[in-house]
Amino acid sequence: SARELDGRAPVTGFAHHRLEPGAETELRRAVTELGLRGYKQLGPRTDYAFEDPRLRPVWEFLAEHKLPALIHFGFLGRGGGVVQHPRMSPLSLFETARDFPDINFIIPHFGAGYWQDLLALCWSLPNIYIDTSGSNQWMRWLPYELTLEGLFRKAYETVGPERIVFGSDSSAFPRGFAVRYLMDQLRACYTLGFSDEDVALIFGGNAAKLLKLDGDAA
Image (cartoon, rainbow, N blue to C red; front, side, top):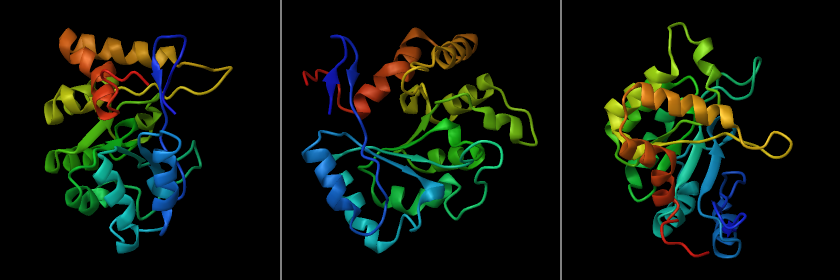
């Protein structure tokens, strides 16, 4: 549940369990009893189409409570990982995201190899957010050149600073907070000439709004 870490940054969590018929029961428990503030899924690990009517109670619950859903699409794992699945592309979310405009969907890692599809989804629907997390090494595996600056530039041109969310992709001890990713991404934004106001949104403000952390005393 949401709490203060050393009296500074608020820490909260997302529910993460299999997306299948009946999943809304565990999701409801995670939100109402544990205080979690969103739902995380891996598209290439999901056995049911997002628009399957049997999953509709999950989306209805998220919409009712205006909770975000973070869904990983694209390459999964390292070399030798998953590269083919019916829900590899962010476009597989189109029908559900269109039908549930009260759910803000966050797509991490700039789409992890499905950059064009993510930009198309963002262009079509206003409830799609671009998460910048991780090393974004997937850029190396595409047949054309991409840079971190290029990703930020195109995201900014497509959705503006209000729908870009920094993600550190950090993990537990001993690795801890991935400072390098933060520094690399801040450098990219300042190289592009983003204003301090834009940087404040991308590196905190947008996440706080999505998670309703502004003025939260929890």
